[in-house]
Length: 194
Image (tube, rainbow, N blue to C red; front, side):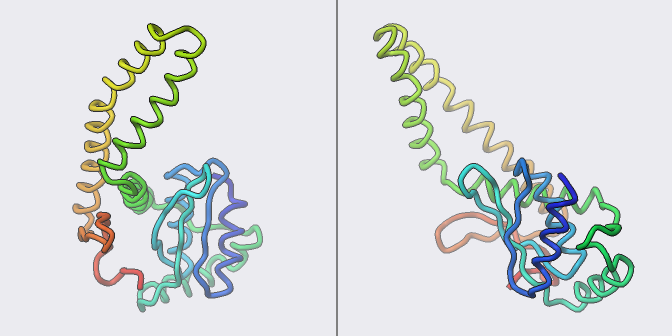
């Protein structure tokens, strides 16, 4: 992740308003690094979502006294951070927790039923081309193989979510269910976004 994205986000944070940010590749690790730097300068991670083919995070101003003190100290120590100066060193542990949180939220944006429907629809669409070009035997065989992969993909997604959930619970995060039924993890009470 380039420092250009960090500096752009830091300049936008000067408005005091919520900020959306993404990286060139939009990886969860890159987004976690952005969220880490936002938290060093008075903001906190709020949520992640997909916009087109990129992932985007939303950071909001932090309201806690510890967050304000950390921001004031970092702005004093790194006054040119938004314009090309030095940045605070990365804390790999904090980035790992943010990465787990972002990954969990992106992995749970659809329920299992929705994921099943989207996967069946997508795999059917993939099999239509070979069916038209090579006939029913090839297209049907491809479709059957793709359908056989669905349970494997669902189990892999459950394990991925469970691994991230375990990391978050170990860091003191609390599992909650949004009104729309989507599970999320909120940080310990002192760092919860409003």
